Amino acid sequence: MTTEPKSPTARAVPAGPSLPLTERQEARRRRILQATAELASRGGFDAVQMREVAEAAGVALGTLYRYFPSKIHLLVATMQDQLQRLHGTLRKRPPTDADPAARVAQTLMRAFRAMQREPHLADAMVRALTFADRSVSSEVDTVSRLTTTIILDAMGPAGPPTPEQLSAVRVIEHTWHSALITWLSGRASIAQVRIDIETVCRLIRLTTPQQA
Amino acid sequence: MTTEPKSPTARAVPAGPSLPLTERQEARRRRILQATAELASRGGFDAVQMREVAEAAGVALGTLYRYFPSKIHLLVATMQDQLQRLHGTLRKRPPTDADPAARVAQTLMRAFRAMQREPHLADAMVRALTFADRSVSSEVDTVSRLTTTIILDAMGPAGPPTPEQLSAVRVIEHTWHSALITWLSGRASIAQVRIDIETVCRLIRLTTPQQA
DNA sequence: ACCCAGTCTGAAACTTGTTCTAGATTAGCG
DNA sequence: CGCTAATCTAGAACAAGTTTCAGACTGGGT
Image 1 (cartoon, rainbow over the protein chains, first blue to last red):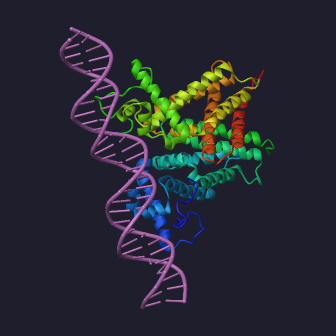
Image 2 (image 1 turned 30 degrees about the horizontal axis):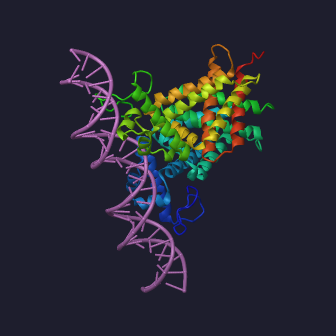
Image 3 (image 1 turned 60 degrees about the vertical axis):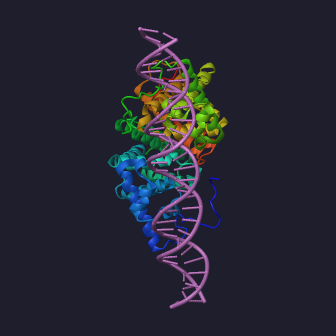
């Protein structure tokens, strides 16, 4: 049920660059994402109400659902959007430390600071990401791949990462998401999140014994 | 808003052992948790519908809400219940390996196999756990402490764990939760979850250099 | 046995995510 | 330009979590 398109006749507007959206459609999509980010910044997950998003974006409710088939899809797409932005910023000023593990920790802490600037937005995006079920798995996967790319970029210019390194990166991602959640739900302090990130980043050192 | 009790006059039935529930109340609570587990086992998070839980438990909807102020509270309490059960089982047959890291990995894999037996139930509980907001933080914290205890138990009879070890345990918990989610949402295989668990458990070796 | 406060019940109401429908608008095409 | 299919809009309708309320019930103290 959840993995199939709901109707064989009505095709949804795809999120990827598959179908060439018209200019108006591209603009609509962008308005929707912007309205979502604004509402989320104000009041977090609960403040993103589909009717309000539609109204703020100047779009009918049905249209909103055509572009994003659920609130979760919408917020995951928002996260994708924001991550892309972050990735751009990071590219311009990459971390400086000599140690790959430290560079990754530095990068994640930079992302964490970005989240601290908009905690409500972070709340909405992260909650959606972890609450997503199979029907959103491809979109969540895209976000995950983006995150992986960011971490690998921070690790350094090394060629193809070893399977061991990929495992370490996955674990780092797990920790990153989960630590973020404990912070957002008020069960961990900012300091604790930093410690957790630094702790898990030690795993990288375990996988790069050929240190120069 | 979310952190305050809604009314100063009406006190809710507490989850902890604070107020001595009458026998009938204890029985009600148990019926509710059992009905929840059964519905969850059948169809996961979505199949746990408050009206159905109430009916299956032979309790009015309002009563259900008096015992558990939200669906999330209900499912987190269910997780607490199940974890307690697991803890009991683990106590009886502790892991055998000589290496603490391996013992922890073994323990988590045992818990993971339990989840594989009831994937829908696991889905409902884990989704609730990660979706929970501040209004549930104390209950989520209880679950977290229980999990920590289980991991520390597996690490061995060592006395007070060092702060470093506690960090490692927190990171292991993060990985455990997040890996579970990726498995439940179909984005990671069972094998991958095992690898992630084994990878993160190496952190324990980093914190116990005084190996005998 | 009687009474009070707190609890439970049944049912309706409200909120917000989601679906559906009928008609207006738009885009692409001959 | 005029046609056709796809898209968009406004609004109703539906589903499930949550709240509320009036009345019945229970337990403990007198």
